[in-house]
Structure formats: structure tokens, C-alpha cells
Image 1 (spheres, rainbow, N blue to C red):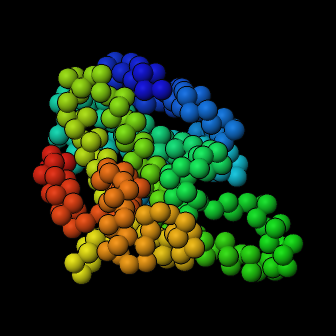
Image 2: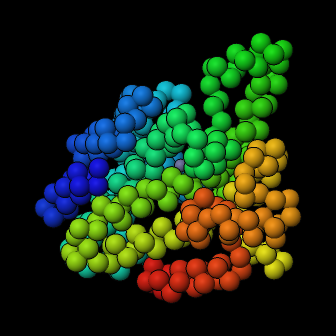
Length: 296
Ligand SMILES: [Zn+2]
């Protein structure tokens, strides 16, 4: 996938061309094809709706699992391409266009990764699949009819759906599916740019910072310990029974940290939002703070 993606980004950027409709269509096709997710993405549309603000800023694209749809808002995209952000000073002349095109590409990759996550939770029995299952709930017609058959009223079902949405909004930083979609999409960009790293050195460094930043997302220092996003989220969801299925879990936080450290590498723990200790946290945070992105 990365070599095809590189060709697409490179052909546009080196000719000074910004992302357009044709680019987006090619991008979606190549990702859906490479990841084998045509079952989960059956439609894509580019609409020119008025820009909508979300927790992450302007809404540029979204994945609708029930409709198997990727929707892109072209006005929002144009606004983003026109705007100059504070990080642009980090890039040399050649990199400027690359930066803008990569910026939009990553957002689309993030949404397509949500489609890929549906495949992962259906097919695999990996750590990633188990963790994703804690934050991805299928709110669809099947769920509604199951609940109706179980005797729930429509009001109760609506209450349940609203509560699910509120939980997601309130704990956005902890959500395993959101953390992973950010990490995976930035990793894909970094791998894509690797063959041209001499051409775009600042951009690849920037992407590596983005990966680390998202790996550290949701970790907080609290009274001498570092709280882990996935663990916190599972506790909030009262998924304790599910937690007990994990070999790294222990009710005692210190024991849990010990077990997680014995089972997984640091990189794997910060990818999946599992426990890390205070010295790991402070050394990762300082490398983040020393990066060019944080210095500018
Ligand atoms: Zn997302």
C-alpha cells in the first residue's frame, strides 16, 4: 500500500498540486483494495456541506459503519488547504505542498482505519481486536431489534444509544479505537515517506512526533502514578469482567503495571494504551517536548 500511496502523494506534491477530488477517489480505492475492506466501505461521497466543528476541529471526513460509507466534506478540505498553520515554518520549500497533502491524507487514512477496525474485530482474536471491542459498539438496526425483542421500550433504547454517545464524547482522549486510528494512520504516513526521507526530512520527523504524541494520548500523571487510557476506559465502561480475561490485568494497579511490563514491550504498551511507569512516562514526554513540533 505504501508504495502506491507514495506515488500518489509524490506525483501531486512535486508538481505543486494540492489534493483534489480525483486524488481522494484514488486514495480511497487504493486503501480499500490494499486493506481488503470493500465489505466495510461500499460507498464514498464527497459533499460540499457547510463546515462543522467537532472536538478535534473542523470535520473533514467521517466513516459511517452502518451505511459502510466514507464521506468527505470538500469545503472543509479547501479551508484546511488554504489556511496556514503554525507548523508550516518547520518545512522547507519542497516540503510545504507535501505537508498540506499529507495532512489531508492522514485524516482520510484515519477514517478508513475505522473501517479496517470493523474487519479486525470480526476476524481476529488478537490483543488489538480485544481492545478495540471495548470501545466499538454496533449501534445498528440489529441491536435495536434485539433490544426490542428483549422487551426494552423505544425510550429505553434511545436512552442507551444516547448514553453510549455521551460516554464516547466525554472520554474521547481515552477511546482505544480513536487512539489506534490516529497511531496507525500516522505510522502509515511515516512508512510511506521513508523512501524519500532525504527529500522530506522535516516532514518525516514531524510524523514521528505525531506518532509519539498519539501514543501518549490519554496517559495522565495522578498522585505519583500514570493512569493508562485503555485501563481507565475499561473501568469507566465497567468492563471489569472483560479486563479479567487479559493476562496482564490485575486489580492492584502496581501489580497490573508489573504484569503489563513483563508481557509487552514499552512500544506495544503505549500503542495499546496499557500501563507504563513514571520514568517511562517522563522520558517519553521529554522527547516529545524536545521535538521540533513542540519547540515551535
Ligand atoms: Zn476517529
